[in-house]
Length: 253
Image 1: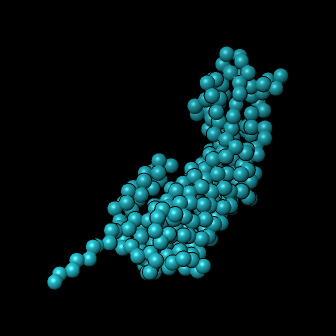
Image 2: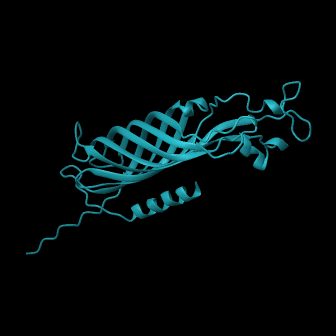
C-alpha cells in the first residue's frame, strides 16, 4: 500500500509542473487536472458476503488533451462500518457472553472494513449539453490494485488474542487487481473555480485471500480461489485545472 501511495504522490507532484494554454470558452484546450473526490459504494458478489456500504475518499491526477482524450491516475482510501461476517470471535467469548482483556475486564472489540485502491484510467470527454468545448460527458475505464481487510480495534484495552500478529488470523486481508468504469459529467468553468465532475462508478476486483488460516474457522481451509469483489455507486469530485497565463499583447508604432 505504501508503494502505491508513494507512486500516486509522485504523479501528483509531476502534474503540478505541467501547464497548458487557456481559452476555455472558445476552444478545446489541453490541461492537467488535479482533483479530490468522494464515492459512496454498495457491494456485490463476494465482497457483499463480508461488508456492506463502503466509502471512498481519494485524490486524482489526470490530463485532458486538446482532442478531449483523458488519462490519469487516482488513489482511494476505502472505509465503512458495516461488517456482515458473524461469529468471528465466538471462541473468545466466555460463559457470560463477554470478551475479557488482560485485566479481566469486559473488552469492547470494534471491527471496521478498511482498504485502498489505485487505478490508471483512460477515457474520452464528449462535449454535449455543455457551456464550452471542454465540458460534457466523461467516460473512462482502467485497471489497478485493490486491497481490503478488517480493522480490529480494542482501543486502550489489551486483549492478548487480538494483539499484534494474532489480528492477522481474523483480518481477512485480501489483495489483487481491479478493473473500473466511470460514466458521468465533467464541467470546466469558463472562469473561476467551479470545476467539478460526478457520475456512476463501477469496480470489479479479482482478488485472493492472503492469509493461510482464519482463527475463527481453523478446521476449514482458506479458499485459494479468485474472488470477485464488486463495488458500484456514485462519485463526485472537484478539480483544479492548471493553465499557463496568457501572454500580454504589445503594440508598437
